[in-house]
Length: 327
Image 1 (cartoon, one colour):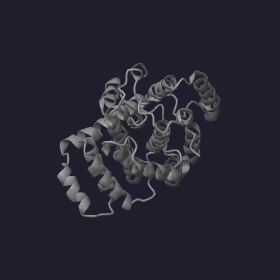
Image 2 (image 1 turned 135 degrees about the horizontal axis):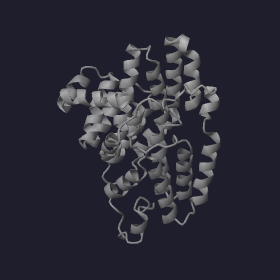
Image 3 (image 1 turned 45 degrees about the vertical axis):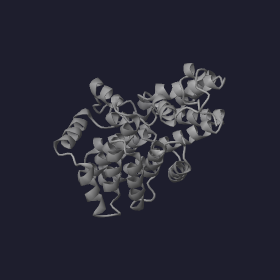
Image 4 (image 1 turned 90 degrees about the vertical axis):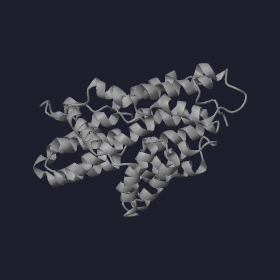
């Protein structure tokens, strides 16, 4: 097992003979890719909504004790256990977070996001093993449920790299890069990780990345053509996004917390649309958010729900979905 794969390229040669501590090595790897970073959540929801959500949370935040009491009232309340898990994770209580995520799964066994979050919490809770077996099991369950789950795919790539299959890890991350939404703020970091692992292991990744870029360009939706030249379709991109200050603030949050914050915000958007189903722009945002998080099945379900609630807008919603690659 190569313990230096997660070190910066310029530090690999100077690494100590003994295995590098997991907490430095693996976290450096995670931060390097920023794949688990969720500033995407700020792109998915308007700046105004994001501010309102955060302000509301700051008005009356629940303590971990209160979240625990609420969750324990119903062992199968998946959302309550998920919020408790996020609170523990944010506070650095990774073992407690893993236990809460495991309980959340009891109420929602087919939720790939919960399984991949469980795997991440188990990784962070492990003091000695950089990729414990129970974490790998959780990641594999996540991709069984949703083969596009980005967090699980990323960590399974890490597992390959730690096992010495550096080319296999790079291939997995290249596949992930190919599906990364154009302009995603974490794209450059994912590229750097591919390049870094290639440099450490004498693998020329430049032509591989170039090939992926060509494939992405060839498969990019042609917005104007799909819109029929009417300029009215947006794929969600014309909906106001975050300010630079908000993006900077998102980047300052630890990567695991960013991903889970994004997921939490998208779930709240989903819940709001159940109460306000006539908000067509909101449904477009939800589809875009789901696609950005790699939740293709949920994006497709959002399209079905949006059309069902707004049959007169079915054509526009389908065209928006086409722009986003929702199938």
